[in-house]
Each structure stands twice: as structure tokens, then as C-alpha cells.
Length: 113
Length: 117
Image 1: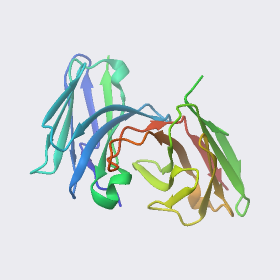
Image 2 (image 1 turned 90 degrees about the vertical axis):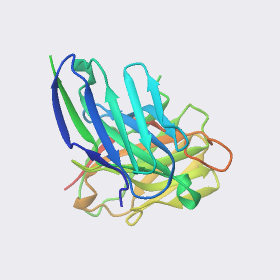
Image 3 (image 1 turned 180 degrees about the horizontal axis):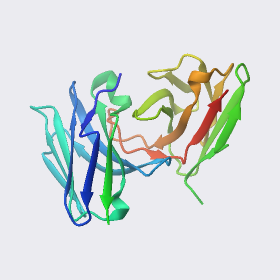
Image 4 (image 1 turned 60 degrees about the vertical axis):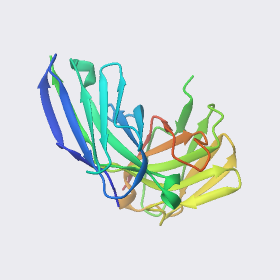
């Protein structure tokens, strides 16, 4: 079963606005990753945050991780039409679960020009 | 050239047929994975392999089998396809990550769209 649950399922914003997506998970993790998928294509890795990190930046992306709440958020600043895609969080577990990534169902982001 | 390639990109087949999906990678990674994606859902792991002699079942392995022919090649077979195996299939690779196995980023192929009639 999928561990990560993204929220909202769909998000529509105007170009230039910020987009925030959230991910909640259930069990302890080693790291949490965010991926982007353009329609019908393969996933592209965006950013990885380890369980001992609280915030990470990459260009216009900002990811936070709160292990006490078992949640993460992805912020895309100054959105562009090209950011239109589905965004998935994926968790890398601990112990036996550390050898797999478990993906959520994704947030579908639409950026309107 | 793409680092992770999948063939075919699209396939339509009939119930009961045997189908093989192939994946090749030039990234030099030891770890390879097969996922399926259904509309509105995330990816679910079918099988994974950490080296040529290592094959492991994922969350939804029933009805599927795999073969790791070489470090660079990992194929997925549907022995007798059924309509509910209609989905988008992705191959992915990763390196070994940190000692102890914490999962590093994965690199995905473009996907194979499979339709079983």
C-alpha cells in the first residue's frame, strides 16, 4: 500500500504565484524525495531530504520535513507554465523498508499563463 | 541518448498473450526496478533487483516475472496478460546509495503504455 499521501490532489494557480503541495506518511523514514511527472512521461527526481534535515532548497524549490508530524511540503516559487505537471512524494523507509521507495498518488499542478 | 530506455513504448495485446517489456540503462547502476502506474494513482513496485543475481518481489508481483540478463538490462514479463494489467509501466535505476541501504534518487525510463484487450 502507498505510504505517502499528497494534498491537494489537484491545484490550479496563475503564473507567478507560489504553489505548495503537502505529503503525509505513516511510518519512520530514512529520506523523502519529490518527483515531477509531465503527462504520460517518466518521473524526474527533484529533491531528496534526509530524515535529519528540516529544510532544503534547490532553485525555485523549497522542501520542508517535519518528522514529528510525519509530513513534508514542496513549495515552488514564482511558478511558470512549464511547472504544470504531477508531483509525487516518495519515502525511503528504514530497516527492511530502506531498499524501496514508496510513492504517493500525486498532486496535479496546473499553472495558467 | 537517454540513460534509461524502454521498449516497446506502446503495446496493445490480447488476453492470454505473453508479453515482455525491456529496459536498458547506461548509467552503470546496480539497482533496477519495475513499477506500474494506473490513472490517478502513484507508482507501485512490481519487482526490483540490486545486482544480476538478486531479484526481489515488490508490492504487486503476482502475474509478473522478471529477468536480469546483465547489469544494464532488466526485463518484465507478463506470462498470460489480463485486462487489469493495462497500465503504464516504468523501469527505473539507482546507485547503491549510502552504506546500509538508504534509498537514493531513482532515474526513470520514458514508460511503456500497455493495453490488454
